[in-house]
Image (cartoon, rainbow, N blue to C red; front, side, top):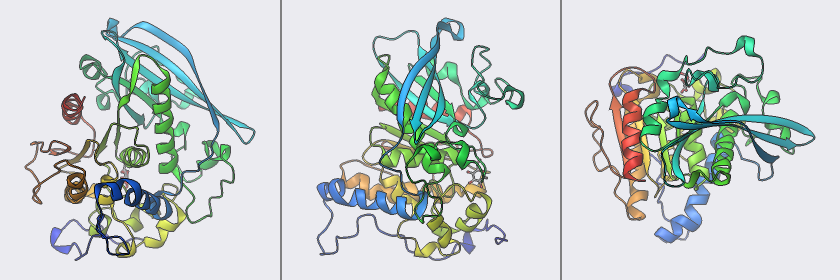
Length: 389
Ligand code: GCU
């Protein structure tokens, strides 16, 4: 059993965060070029070895095919496309089901948001044409998560949306690996200390969405924002950290193993997350249960891997399990890397008041209310993405 969660700031243990810009072993300081050419890769490798597991270099062949499209979706506002990414590797096949909405009114390729959904494409909007692949009997109801996906608002602002169900990549339970994409990769050995888990595979899938964006002439692959809520926010961060083609990265209430500082042990801890979700991280991450101080990184360094690209981190006031203050401090402590690369980050160690977004290159807000992704959150992401468009 893991210990009771700590929700009292005075009980946060004293800790020292690793410095993303610590001098090189020969004593030389890190310049912008030193960050880009050396340190960035070192830190990314540390996250692969110790936290999320390594993303294999070789993977299945991917072929995209459009299986349905309409020029008359959302009452004429949008073009809808339903696309299969067919993956072949190790003699096996899997299909990722991408759902795409593109503004009907556009002058050229449009910027987009991409993110995974928790319960199936049909949940993101009541549109009856959204396909429900697989076993339809167990499928979550159409439109049941529409509050999380303000599709009309996204399209009205000139953005496309591309989403897929995270379970197409790794069904989200400890025995999910075999039914997901893992068997398509050479030598998938779950015992290896740096074997990737669900978060790694979800992130891999987000990069395949980017490949799709690059192949669709209606989409501008140089302007794709990756967004995710909670566990899927952890995946969005890891995707954005690894794949620098993502132009903008958004973490919504991603908490432990996402934006929040692990060493604070506030709310969900490393031990709690590994116990609750043993399939999310690599085996080595489990050796840091109750030993956060031994980690060679902390999560501010994951956010620093997004630099110099725009980054948005959002918390919710009642979402103490995700440690809102730890999420804010993480963005704050990523700031020196943004500054090294010529941008301002967050300048105050003090959190902003509730419902008062701050920041320009690094955006942050803490919303009133619970663990959720809401219209308020999306309004901030749309504003932030439009500013950086
Ligand atoms: C659990 C888990 C979190 C996760 C959340 C979610 O609460 O402990 O780490 O972010 O589920 O995905 O909603």
